[in-house]
Length: 329
Ligand SMILES: Cc1cc2nc3c(=O)[nH]c(=O)nc-3n(C[C@H](O)[C@H](O)[C@H](O)COP(=O)(O)OP(=O)(O)OC[C@H]3O[C@@H](n4cnc5c(N)ncnc54)[C@H](O)[C@@H]3O)c2cc1C
Ligand code: SF4
Image 1 (cartoon, protein in one colour):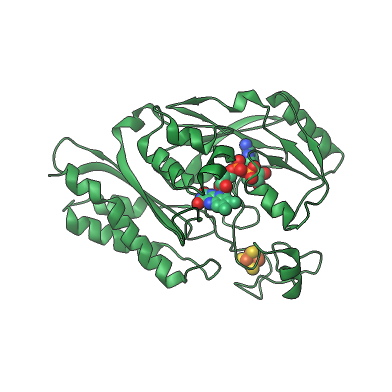
Image 2 (cartoon, helix red, strand yellow):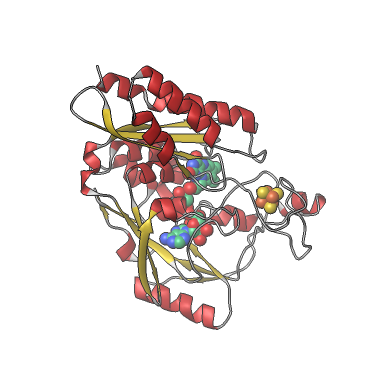
């Protein structure tokens, strides 16, 4: 598994990074951004859609800021875990990502923009050649998708990053920059339902930071994750539930988001709103959990079966709601 050769660019500022990107685009040269490299570089070693140019964000100091309401794209996962200003549920989700070693290199921006995963794709080049490739990395063969064949337009690889559902429940806004300017959007609007496009980033654009509303401290909640090995695996299902109490016995706002179940993380607004109507503690949680099971539509491209992952979405939702029963005592 040899790394394919590429030219590494190491800008020292955001302006310089965007200028390099713009020049490469003008010269019609494809490139990737690299942050911690814990996802991109293993993919390069497996010759998965590698590019001839890579722009490192390691020295772009503008991207490193961390405050309760501002999380720079280059903030390390380990920093989220250790920080005293980060929301505790976000710190918990970060602590469940991969291993300590990976968390010391892996970043927030890299986690949000993580490539989607599929067991027909995350394999060595020899392995993929032996099955005649697949649509996401077809090596010029126009190979079909192996999960949903006979369509060859859509990749249904799974989004398996842990931070997005918690950040969605915290109502995060994502901020992007390119040589033509900056723009922002709700994180819930950032993802694209295609395992290849993945998100709304335009060519030459990067994530600079995320912002979290000031009232996030008033939101309580939990993140629950299903994985094969507790030591470091990607989520086979992940559920974040967050709520704001009304000072009485019921929540007056509730948010639920999932990961590891589809090509994009899911934000389940209608299910949460329905559960809030006539809130009835345990019974409401039970029907909310069942509605999340029904809402998610995993396909067979990760370790566990789709039906097990759906059932576990229900179980994880119930577990993530446990604190709601405590709060309403
Ligand atoms: C063994 C192993 C286990 C893992 N387990 C988990 C897990 O349990 N949960 C989980 O969520 N992840 C897991 N990961 C994936 C990965 O380590 C983390 O998601 C990490 O946060 C990725 O961050 P990075 O900085 O290393 O990203 P990189 O590898 O540098 O980049 C990842 C992708 O994001 C893009 N990118 C990076 N930064 C930006 C930016 N600022 N703007 C635009 N695009 C950008 C890159 O171009 C690339 O496409 C695991 C990885 C390994 C190797
Ligand atoms: S979902 Fe289909 S196209 Fe996408 S990686 Fe898997 S087999 Fe390939």
